[in-house]
Length: 286
Image (cartoon, rainbow, N blue to C red; front, side, top):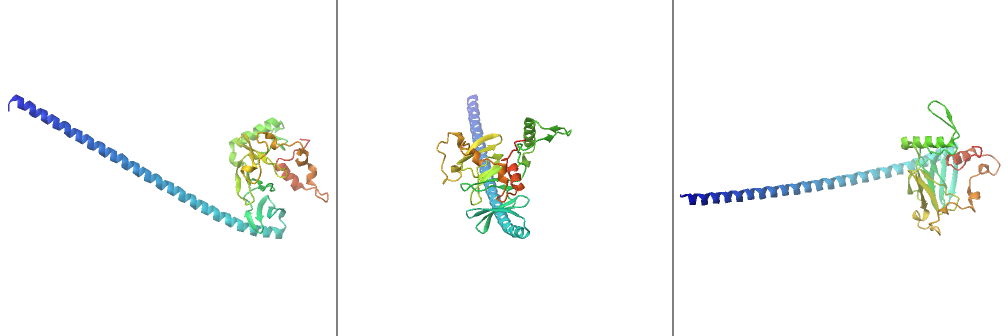
């Protein structure tokens, strides 16, 4: 072979090598793409199984909670009968076909006709029904400072300054939020239409209100009952935030110490205790 033929043969080999390398590169890219697609499919399948597993766990938890609730309702009936027999029923207040029952040690429950719909012990406080809604409180510290006249610091020094008491309470609440009770609202079926996650819900029972004030994480808001029960009308002017404050009936609806006397003139200390715990009553001397 002369030099010209050798050059031509070398060019052919170079071209073939380039084609071979290109083919190898294309095959590698194809395998990489297939590998990525396979990994994506594996990841999608894993996510699907995880979601299915979470949904299954949620259903199991819901079923367990439903079973627990059912058992608690059964236990509440037995506890109620035992309390009736032993005289441990503090009060039974009817609201239509609903009856709020309070046992000793602040154990509240609700019966609808002859069956319990809210078991004893679920809430530490259940208020009366108004517009088919009731304010409830879970177990824990209330955080009320209105009726606290003094506290003690770490050195047992007495503190009576109102501002310092409130600051200390806020500081402790921030450090130990799990120790504090939460407020919510239930309807006549016992369902929480406003979840028990609020630090405060202002009293609306007996006040003929269409809304109430709530506080959550230090932020105040107004809850309109229409949004909880569509049969309740909206206030005529929702922009006017005085729907909770009505000068015409404020004197009639505020708690008074005379409310603690029954029709025979006996003083009900339990009623006073409830008013203090509920933040309704502050002595004029404090």
